[in-house]
Length: 191
Image 1 (cartoon, rainbow, N blue to C red):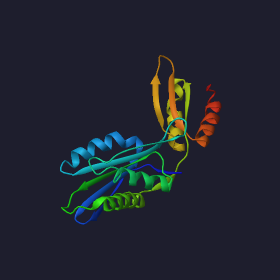
Image 2: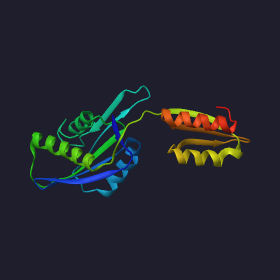
Image 3: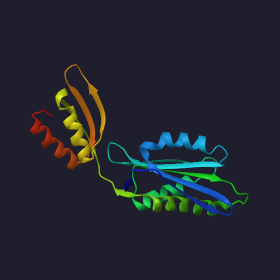
Image 4: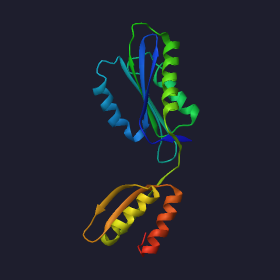
């Protein structure tokens, strides 16, 4: 399986209609959707589709044709995501109508090609499943733990400061989790 960490975009033209495709991590979905509506108020359609894994590692898919004929826009994008084995990714395709109707086959080809083009421009990475990891530490260890997490490429999802300790919640892959356990054991912290 594959995914990506950054937002990418590219432009594609078919019979005077302009398609601007954006690919992003699914965590950026709501923010990117809101930004695109503001940035492209005159667009005829802003089609979207996403494919992500839920807590049971099952693929969850959704999409919107945004006024295009049913199954001519979001479905072709989902087919590209499925076919290439992408997870935890969303694609938006902004269409500016060029005055020439493309027909259902033309729309399917245009939206498929928009998705393929933006994914070709993206920096694709291998998907690594992550699981939640929580622990508590003393205040005196916070800077050491922050440095360790930065060095290993792990980022904390949530951190809560209590009266005499700090509670951490992270999303880690198996290798990061094992390294952190060893590091915390060396500090003398309990997990």
